[in-house]
Image (tube, rainbow, N blue to C red; front, side):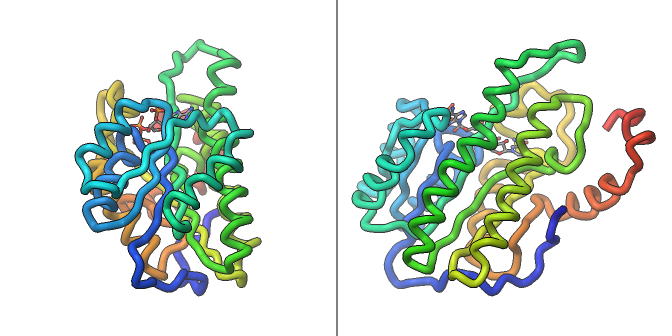
Length: 260
Ligand SMILES: NC(=O)c1ccc[n+]([C@@H]2O[C@H](COP(=O)([O-])OP(=O)(O)OC[C@H]3O[C@@H](n4cnc5c(N)ncnc54)[C@H](OP(=O)(O)O)[C@@H]3O)[C@@H](O)[C@H]2O)c1
C-alpha cells in the first residue's frame, strides 16, 4: 500500500516570499510545534483547532503578525470552503496545507461505542478529506502547492487496540496516496507523514511508548520533509519503515495472537 519514499518530481519551487502555511489541528502536540517553528522562521501561519485559548497563546508567543488564529471544528466540513477563502485572503495566498488534527480516545477491550468511533472517522479521515480536497482544488488552479497529511503507522495493520482509529488512519493514508497520484504532473505535491509514537497529550495515557519522539522533533522532520523533494511518504523515526514492512507481512492468523 505504501510507497516508501521514492524521489518526488512534484516539489513546489521555493519562493522568496515567506511560506504561507495552514495548520489544521494546531492547538497542541505536533500541530502546535509546527506553528511555533514555522512562525519563528518568519512564515505566515494560519492556526486552526477548537481550543481558541490555546491558539491565542500560540499567537501571543510568536513574532507579531505571524500566527493567524481561526477557531474551527473539523467535523463542520461545510465551513471549509468559506474559511479557506478567508485564510487565503488574510495570508495573501497559500503554499502549504498541513492536516494534523486527530483524536484517539482510549478504548477498553470490551468497548464498542459507535458514537466514539464515528468521531474518530469524522476527525481523522473525513475532516482531512474535506480540507485536502478544497485545498487541492485551489492548488490545482495555481499548478503549485504542497498538501501534507499526518496519518500514522497505526493505519497499516488492524491491531486489536482501537479498530476505528486504525481504520480511520488506514483510510487517510490511502486517500493521501490516491490524491498524490491524481495530482502527479499538475505541480501539486502530496506528502504523507507516518509517525510512530510522539509524546503528546494523545499518548499521555499510554504506559510505555516505543521509540518516542518529541512533538518538536516531529515538526522539524515534517518541515524538512515537505521542503525537500525526496520523500512522498515519511515514517518518523525512519526505523518504523523497516518495522512496518515486516509487520505488514505477518499472516493474519498469526498477527491476531500477537500483543503488538
Ligand atoms: N502522538 C502520537 O504518538 C501519534 C502517532 C501517530 C500519529 N499521530 C497523529 O498526529 C496527529 C497529531 O496528534 P498529537 O499527537 O499532536 O495529539 P494532540 O496533542 O492531541 O493534538 C491533536 C490536535 O487535533 C485537534 N483536533 C482534535 N479534534 C478536532 C476537531 N474536532 N476539530 C479541530 N481540531 C481537532 C486538537 O485541537 P482541539 O482539541 O483544540 O480542537 C489538537 O490540536 C493526529 O492526527 C494523530 O493521530 C500521533
